[in-house]
Each structure stands twice: as structure tokens, then as C-alpha cells.
Image (tube, rainbow, N blue to C red; front, side):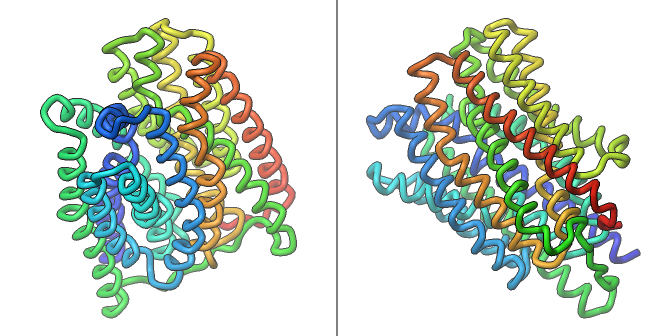
Length: 401
């Protein structure tokens, strides 16, 4: 009973830190990018080029972070990561030149890997591998509100504060709210272990036989990389892109539907998705995301089409977040989970590193419509990769029980 209460508290605490972590370190960037460009006297495309470089560096460091999650414990890494995130937000706010700003954004992405889903999922698997899939669903259900909360907050704050002052506010949130919660999770785990409240961990054995895991990992990594590129392209430009299509002030409202749609998909999965395996969930998530992009490509400024786009993208992204945590556990087991998800994150971030800049350049050169269809084509390749994984998993029905 005590162990269940601790696990519930851990999920709730991580839910809060994921909302703040994604809201301050990721979702706010697209809202503030234009102000950053004006401040430094550069183009918005150049600002997103810096962001793309940061994603690439984040991908390079993800495997190292994954190994540290396994070695030091996820909560310890997240506690340190919150402090680094706060410090780098302050560095961004202070940056007197483009060079310092670029360095700060790169460091910000590295710290993101220490506090966002990769680390949070590892914390849940570390706590109890057997219940981790359910805990991951609950966590993503809570964290799905990040965009709906921080897109409007960031947009509203721009009317009163500069982007530098907004980043200082965000630094305080990471330092005063997230770091204490991560420290509590670390302490709660140590106390539970010391007092014998935590039940013995039951390791999860993956569905893919050891001798076939290398090739299966490559396919999984490629699939998440392709869908990561698709999603990163859209999310980095969501509100400005909708505005450019002619939706005006409704762009923020439509963009804000993305978050509730993520939450809805996770709620539906929690209630009705128990019959679907993680590979099947991954396929469904990919199809929904690509469908949303295609709908927007055809509908343009038509308001119902834009709403359908945001809802489909949010539904797909919501399930995809669950798949990022549950699919590696299902296929490859709990041993070395942090290192495996670190390599997966590296592939996803490295492939998606060029997404914000490439999509911004594409919109400028060939227009929004063609850019959307090109992005959807890449996502379709991701659907195919997930289908291959699902077929391979069905050949080995000894998946983790």
C-alpha cells in the first residue's frame, strides 16, 4: 500500500515537472522566436537554425544521458538537470550576442534531455518495470496539457514582458518547482528502499529475441526519427504557420487544441487501449499524425480543416509519447532501458534536428502547402517502419507479460 502511494506521488510529481519542462524549454520557443530574431537583428529562419543545431547536439548527448540514467538513477539526473535548465534559461536571457545565445540554446536542449520524457520514463521503469507502461500512460495524460498551458501563457506574457524577462520567469519555475519535486522523487525512492516498503522489482523480458534485437532496434530508431522529424517540423511553427495560412487570431486557439487532443488520446488509450500492443499503438499514432498534416495541406485556411489537423496531430502525438516509453520496454525489456531509450532519442533528435530550420526554409521557398505534403511523405515512411516492427513482434509472442 505504501509503495502504491509512493508510485502515485511520483507520477503526479513527474506530471507537473513535465508540463513545466516541455512548456518552458520547448513549446514556448515558437512563440518567442520572432522577438528573439528582432532583438538580435537576424531572421526567424536563423533563429530556428540555432534551434536545429541544439536538437542535433541534444541527440548526440542523449545516449550519454541514457547511460547516466541507468548508472546514477533517473531522479538524481533529473534533479541536476533542473538546475542546469534554470541556469541555461538565465544565460539565454542575459546573452549579449548571437554566439552566446546559440550556446545557451544548445545547452538548453542538453538539459532538456535530462528532465523530459526520456528521463521521466526511465524513472518510472526504474521504480517498477511491471507497472511502468500504465504509469507512463498516466504521466503522459497529465503532461499533455503542456502546450495548451504554455502556448497561451507565452503569447500573453509577450504583451507585458520581453522574451528575456519571460525566460527569467521560466528559470524560476524550473529551479523553484521542478528541482524540489525531482529531489523529492529521489529521496522517496531511497527511503522506500531503505525501509523495505518498495516491493522487489520484477524485470521485464522483451518480445524480440536477443539475436534479432540489433536489426529491430535500427527499425524502431528509424521510425521514431522519421515521425520525430514530422512532428518537430509542425510543432516548431504551429501557431505562426496557422496565422500565415490566414487564420489570424484563431491560430493560438486552434494550436491550443493540440494539448487537449493529446490528453484525450491518452485517456482513450487508458480506458480502451489495453487490447492494443505497443507496436500497434505506434502504428496508430503515426497514421494519425500524418493524416493531420495531410488535412491541413488540403484545407489551408478553412477553419474546420485546421481544427481537424490540430486534433489529429494531437491524438497521434499523444499516443506516440506513450509508444516512446512503452515500445522499447515491450520489445527489448527493462534491462538497460535508459541506454536503449537514449540511443532512440539520439536517432529521433538527430534526424529531427534540421526540422525547424528546414520547414521554415521550405515554407519560404515553396509555400506552406507543398511543405506540409513533403513532411507527410516522410511521416508515411515512418508508418511503414512501425508496421515492420509490429510484424516482427507478432512472430515472437513471448512478449513481456
